Image (spheres, rainbow, N blue to C red):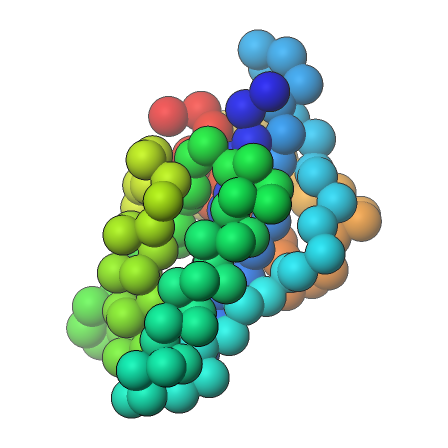
Length: 139
């Protein structure tokens, strides 16, 4: 069964949600132990290596076959911080073959066209990661 991980990068954390394909048209939220993985100190090589190991372990443990990352702005008021760019690069270099970036506009458009409601079992901070995974699942 195909599992898709949606990720929103915020501050020094990767916020995670995993969807499990039920059939051709529907996905269910998979219960996961870790909902966030932090990059503790982006200037410390050991912390960067620890983040990479932790994210790869998460993907392995949850049998993730596709990763969808919500794109961050590169400039302007909502630009992502340096840590988010580093985390994105680490995730793109992960052991998962299928890693894509999803624009906020694509997520918003998908949500409007499909009346995508966020399941109640998710924490509020996971909503963007969920919508990112759902949008990426259809690509």
